[in-house]
Length: 474
Image: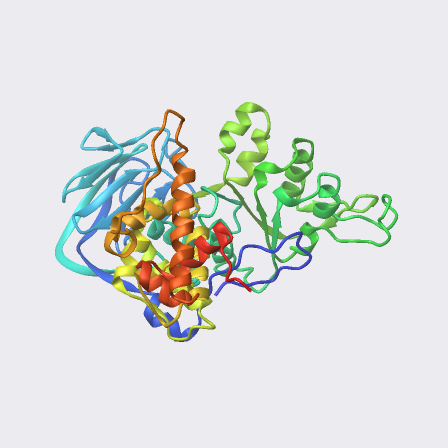
């Protein structure tokens, strides 16, 4: 579980999705993958003679010290040059945006499978894939080392393996991705797997800080430093001493404050506003943004030197729509975390299937809110299609997936067509509101019976009643 030390923060971080021990066996799943027993042998170049055993699902190659295979003496190798990954088809090499490229049998490749005996050139070194003519099993984990994150997709398994390697090394890490993809959860997972796990985890949302107070909040102030400063106050950097400082929405940080932030990160010293002494601070910096900071640098709204300083390692979180295979695990995890009033609850396979078919533009955050609403309105602990409380913007997908549950089959009176424009949406809304009210009256305002009568879910009926202001007469 992720540590949760949040002292004096301007706003609480998004709720961590946590596990208890009784759930570990159900949710923290892993599997075995049968692969060929391979090793890479450096047959030429500065690494000649080295042998690298391939014994994990994912191996990183580069100059960075956190890589599995480190080529620190080869200046033509990028920090994070490429990745080797086993899957059901074999061993795959993927270029990770290297400057000088990856060459397989003399041809530059971005993504390719390797065969025994194949020669792989990385920088000045040539590596040959050697088969030991045997099979072995490797672990494929669907969770990270802290038990904070789950996912079956290759995107999330890559993130799990990356966190495992970089978390203990105290490196500045930038988390990127769309809003709601879980950047705060990844930050807490990194903290939990670092050497600072027993120290504070200080969450700061830069987008919510008052422009007039942001400097004082970050760096602290002495008593009397400005109007209203009636006492000394340590800033967030001091509060994070010995632990982790997570600056969410760092792209919102004012340009004029960025040089001071850069200086603090590099020298690990702060001076409070109104103070004369520098104070040593020891923290790991994590930052997150949903902006493309490289584009913000080009626009002049973010300093280039600060961008490179905070993104020694960059982890991009994929949107939920690109990894639907993760949704059943996520849904079960969220359900467990929110089912206090509905013990032993679970989704049916049909309900899980519906959840997987949604696009979820709000990503994991939107999925979490939908499941919380579902639990709040559910009648029993078996959650089926009719019980799901889905976002209205995604309802068309739900209808397509379950037409027998949601589409009325009885005709209603149509308005007479004239030469005047017809406001179709208004007509449909008025018709739906009137039908719902009539159905409620017929069923003596019993919501459960009315939902069954209309062949819709109770959650959906409540939502429509709220939308149209339908209330039982007093």
